[in-house]
Image 1 (cartoon, rainbow, N blue to C red):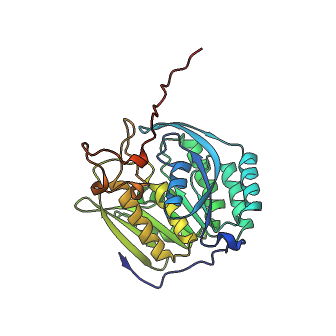
Image 2 (cartoon, rainbow, N blue to C red; image 1 turned 45 degrees about the vertical axis):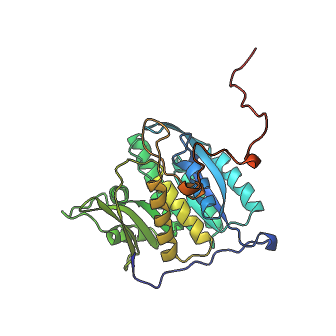
Image 3 (cartoon, one colour; image 1 turned 90 degrees about the horizontal axis):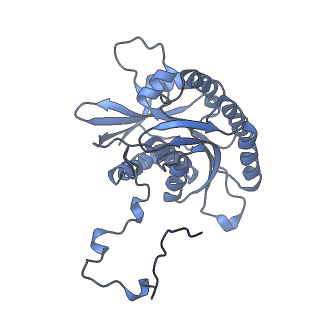
Length: 315
């Protein structure tokens, strides 16, 4: 990773209860994804993988599979507010992660909530919304720009997505750099922007952490052959959790990108569409530890006489 230290660090609120020392909590605002690729499923597993505790505030639900998003059903803003306020009165949170929250109204109430916890950093992720209706996209992006970006500490998004959103009138023949995008985000109050998927020659992409003043870190990866769903949620949730654990921003970005790379390397296709990151790759047994087919299982792992029941419903 190429970098320009020193990196910023944030004053992460400490846990109130000494018995939970060493743990850290991330309040996540995101939609449920029944395919398990992104949304709260990605957030919970990624945060747990780096030792954090996710408190997911569900803002809506996708109707989707691994092939595409068919629809999205947004929760009422009162339901989102009630979820968040209730858990925040009970649990000391170290950071907020904001994903796709489904409506301009939900953006508004989440911005109010994060403003009430001004000492808590916010990682905001902007996904590709091209599957949505154009009028809904415009309302959502306008609300997010005006209300959520001023509360955001680190903005995460793909180069093309952030370009279209933050620099719609870009007229230069060259593509905007990460610093160009960071400057546009900074106009709305965002101090740091992590721009992912910047195309490079020979099947490589660059991921750049930038401020309006400088490029703070760059990480280059080779493209995978597969098309993935859920990578952005995975990266932004991991980054939020690592910041909550006390890492400075440069260290957290490097570790989060390395974790995502491993997740994609171990990715799999649970259905007929896109591949899904394997966020639990670290829990898979080593090949050397796997028993051979002719090796009897350990007696301690066998429950005598146990037979899985059939999945038949009898009336």
